[in-house]
Length: 494
Image (cartoon, rainbow, N blue to C red):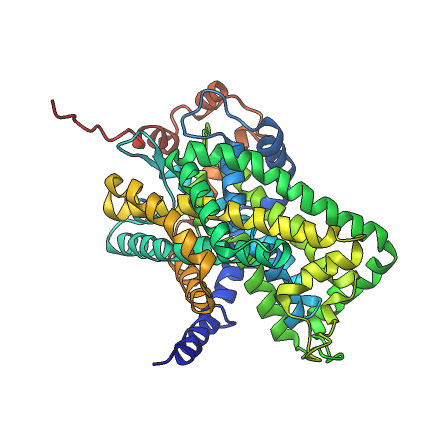
């Protein structure tokens, strides 16, 4: 089979997995179901969760590897990437302004899924031979769902996650960095590849503590820089915002008619691309963020679950919204390429929108630098996801070789064309989500029950570890959580 034929096969498989008959209804349905079971947790507790994650940041005296804030920024590093720049443009370019509405719906419902998977990641985490916390769907699916089904779901997730991390979390991100630096600053792709590879391996050798320190410093800066640039454009074009919002809400339910070079869409396309790209951006329901959450120092799984939930809010409701409104309010979403007469390529759309809205070359630079920082941090976040699943499959001894191989593959991504890798990565991401979503539905009763027990005692998330120990004393689930993560003792040979 030639490469074009293989590309067609992969695109067909990806379209089915991420289409309206499999992942889209399953993801939205799971998010809605969990929202109902948890009593609209993402709306009622959002303020307290943001305060705990962004301002309190720590649970002093709690067990774990990194702070709650570092766990949040590690997850944000993995999700705030090319999807927030190119993915949003793709959704709006094909689905029209209404696609942004469905990205919001995906984000709001996805917050319940993100809470649940992060809660479970901490609830069923273990301590490995190196004394580090390890958790995520590769563990909680087996520990929470007894019998062969739980083990099958856990192993399936681990295999798909390891494969996916080399694609969507590595080569595609490196390629985006290299191509943008070459186009903007004439930096050879091989030079970018070497620098990025060396940077990656230096950070990864230090493990999750090193990754946490880097992301805690990098992620807030990159998000603030990008959002400030977008806000400047939106303030400068404030007169266009009412019409932008009108288009978003009306076309979410009516679709978009053909305009100029725009191919046109109907309601199902707006829904499909809005949901698919929203999930691609925030990863709610995929289970990946639970892996970072499991490393957090926290006095109770509910607390870290709520902190991790804010990652979807920041990613979708803030960053994605900024990108989408800039594209729509500047009118670039319906711009035509003067050379081809067709709609402007999605890869150029966000850059063109920022260049239109900002003076001089500032827009161009902000998007390029933003993409480099976003994609670079995504590599770090996904490296941790990959290594935790490699450990689940092959043991702790495989972690360091994985870190080295993962870093070297970054160079490959910077220097080759990746159309096949993009399609294959989309498939692996979708296959990761399937066992996790099944697990979330099966474990939803446990999540709801233990969440209610905790929040009845600490509704504002202000309790200290000593206070948590006091009011949770005697609770079987809490005692089980405190004792199940006992380190594996490795006997040293003398």
